[in-house]
Length: 427
Image (tube, rainbow, N blue to C red; front, side, top):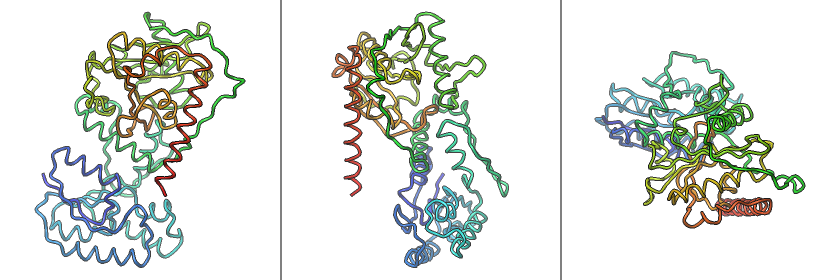
């Protein structure tokens, strides 16, 4: 199959780059016919932009027909549909908008006044574009659905279609099948969803440190789960933190039993942190040699390692109860897992990390191993790796309050350096 990706679309937008990449990965021969009008910082519909757009549309409409089976119009290609129709010569025309042009220019970027004649013209262009296409891929409803999924929470709004439409639903069971059957494609999608999150949500990545007076040497013991009761306590703590505290929607949650479990528990080594007979933290490790990790191998960048799969492992379900964060439980869990991995010949440990926790993991010695991706439970996350050959001996030693404070100081320094680098790069 051959597809012509056509129009004045923004070549830098993930909406376009990821669609083209996915089509090519699926074996579609994608050719591009592009005229540059839009860009990251070129969204004002002034006279110069409109003149460039008019010239581009004239050139596109005069372009020769192509032998492609389908013509795809990218984002923002709302003005490209008439030219696409001429080039298609009766073949299907598919419109791939991120959102309506009014959403972008009027509501999002606010470069057009809501009640101005320009706004009315933009809305009219939207209506004509949607009517001209044989198929519109994910219209105005997609941001709400994606934002709800990206946050791990139910959508907070209802979308009512104005005309007959269709939707591709990828539920938890479908995603699970894709993870095992098409791991490379699943990894590509999850990275794409993380890019959408970066574009559509903003987050304050600052974090608070407990006051010095609140940090006291905790009496915390870490155990490897050996019995059913201990294992159940770890699964219940996952549910408590993910579903009850954070309000997330885990695809692995059993709401009747109030626990979270998945297939990695079958071969995993699960540790719990216990204080006063109460489970306050947990962490799971899986050796890559013992189980198929499906898309996780690609997402974590493990396939690039010379040690994989014989001497690599992943750590997941790393959780500490909210009231116990800021103490030694997290460090003790990490130390126990590192020691256990080294005893089993593991040389590299992989983990995923939310953006807010990056300074802490960097302070521990983890390094980023690949692009950001969407975690089904935690949202946008970075894959990271700890070199146990270089860092294992140090990190395997249990620390107390002094080591925790040292970690906090290092994390603060890393946060400051990252901000300085980001500022310098933007100048």
